[in-house]
Image (tube, rainbow, N blue to C red; front, side):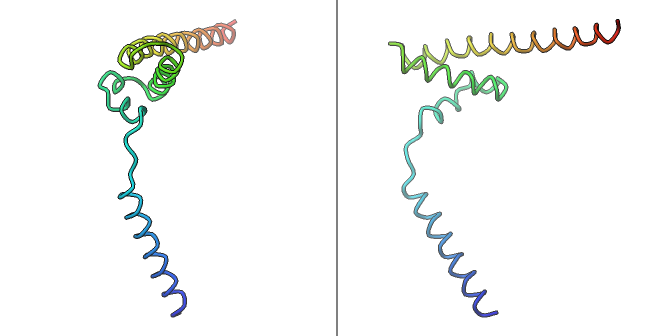
Length: 102
């Protein structure tokens, strides 16, 4: 019993040291972290938000565009993408209902 208790104590010390070390050496917020705090993204669904963040990163990487403009454009593109996906799924559902009715 003494062996397992000492193992638990040493594991606990390790976890405390690891937590302390990771909080001391925190990295600066990334672009993704900064984007997540934008109010424009907070009302989007998680899937649309993720799509917008991916598009914004791609626009910044490939275009000569400011991050603010890239985010605005990415939000519009992601919203259009989401509407098209919803419309497709609604049409598929309606079509399957029509097929069942026939």
